[in-house]
Amino acid sequence: MLRSMTAYGRAESVKGKTEFTAEVKSVNSRYREIILKLPQVLQPLEDRIKLKTSSTLKRGRIELSVQMKDNNDVNLRLELNKPMVKAYIAVLNELNRELGSDQPINLSLFSQLRDTILVKQENVDIEKMWPDLEEAIDRALISIETMRLNEGEIIAKDFFARLEKIESFINEIESRANIVVEDYREKLREKIQKLVGNLEVSEDRLAQEVAFMAERSDITEELVRARSHLEQFRNYMDQDDVVGRRLEFLLQEINREVNTIGAKAADSFISQRAVEIKAELEKLREQVQNVE
Image (tube, rainbow, N blue to C red; front, side):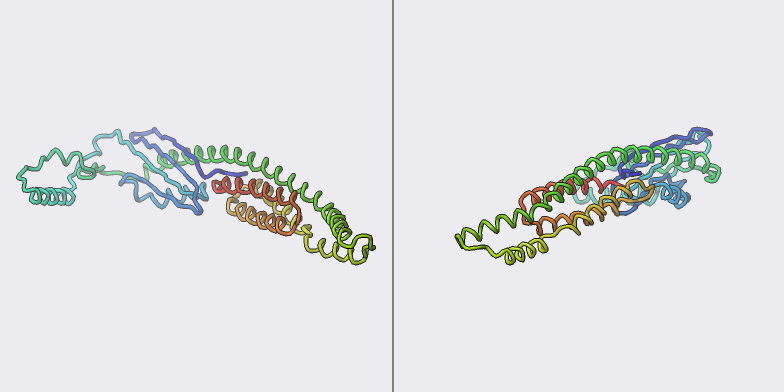
């Protein structure tokens, strides 16, 4: 089954004094990249959260954020971030000197600057918090996984429709290839007849020329390989695994076979069908970029 790499999940855990909200967003990426946004007090759990996330989401750029609300006010205290405040004061004093101003620094300004006042929690036992936090993360991961599977079903339907279209074009090419040689024989006979007039055309020489053309333009192997790649593509779509890059590789191989078919077959109908196949392959390639 296919999974889309673009999805969103959210869940909350409200049991004790502390409320947790976990949000997970993912977008397509060639590899897996997990970005965590955690409150400072939860940062010691970063490795544990990453391991849990990676066990569910195998590929994509994944952003997991946790919001934490402690309703137990006695654990909260505010602390001045003195190094940052001093740095701001130094910059503001330098700005006054540059402008030739003696404007005093308004202390209310620091309440609007990020991280100048820190919220600290005392006597926090993160191990006691972990079960509730884990529940929020697990439910958010289930939510995003459900969305990825639903989106994957939509992509799979589009894939199957395009694969059927490609296969029908291949069938048409194969049917046409069987009569191209005979058409070439008749056209060559007519051309020679115009040149030699009433003289008898050498059937042996004509047969040799037709056989050479048939060998040079034979596309049997390419058609067999293209069909094999299409079958592999369908098989991978049914696997419960990370298959996006394998599907991408198969599309490249099918495109290679179609290019060869178009180059070898000296026939406008086959060339036209090869162009149609390549258009469908390009649409598949765009979609497969979003498959896990």
